[in-house]
Image (cartoon, rainbow, N blue to C red; front, side):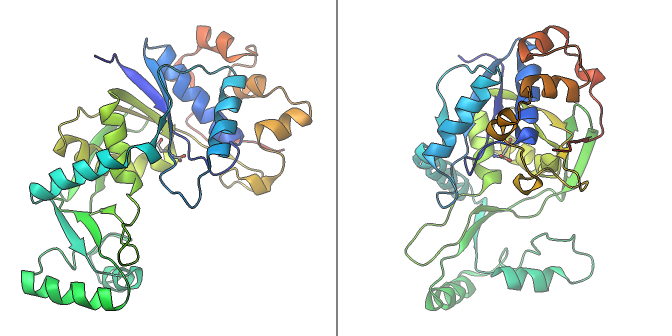
Length: 303
Ligand code: GLU
C-alpha cells in the first residue's frame, strides 16, 4: 500500500529555470507539510525532445536546492506497456475511436459557430464501419496513421482546485494516442499518461503551474473513467519574466547553474518569492510555510 503522495513531473528537455524550480519547491512544500510522500516522475514521453542527460541534471538541481524524494524515480519511457494496456482496456469498453483528421481539418471544422475554440468538433466520432474503412485507406495512402480519441460523454466537467476553487471546463474527445506515420505508433498524449501515472502511483495531490488548470477537468474525467480517485489539485501562479510573459530561457540567466554563477542564492530567492524573506533554505521554509499566505499573482523575476 502506498500512502498519500504528491509529485513533481518535469519534462527533461533542458535545464529547469527559476519558474520550474519554484513550482517544484511548492509541490514539495505542499506534500511535506501535509505528511505526504513526494515522488519524482520524468515525463520523457516525447523521445524527440527528452534526454536522459537532461533528466539527470534536473534531478541533481532539484536535490541541490533542498528537495528530497521518496521511492524510485519513474520514467514514462519505461511505462509504454502499461499505457498500451490501458488503451486496450478503454477500447474494449468502446470508449475510444480512430480519428483521421489532420490539424487543418480540425481547425476548419472548429471554426464553425458554437464550437469552443481549439476543441475537437467530433468529425470522426460517429462514422459507420464502412466510412471508417474508407477514411483509413485514404489516410494510409497519405502515409498517415489515425490518432485515437476518447469518447467523452460529459460536455463539461468540474474540479476543485485549492486556489481556483470550483473550476469547470468543456471537455472534447481528446487525443489519447497521436497519429503518426503509417506503420509507426504515434506518441501517447500527455493528458492520457499523466492520469495513469498519477493513479498508479497513488498520488492524491497534484501541485503544478496554473497554465495546466484548464487541462485538469479532462484529466479528472479520465481518472474517474479508469477508477482512480481524483487527486486534490493545486495550481500555483507562474513566474513571469521582465516582459510580463511566462519566464523562459531566452530571458537571460534563469537556470540554477546560471544563477549560481552570478552569485545568486537560489533557495533564498525562492523563499523570498513565496513571501518568506526571512527564510533562506527550503528546510527553513518548510517549518513556516502556510499555503494560504501564497500570493495568487504571478511573481515577476528580472534577471
Ligand atoms: N511535464 C509537465 C511540465 O513539465 C508537468 C505535467 C504535470 O505536472 O501534470 O510542464
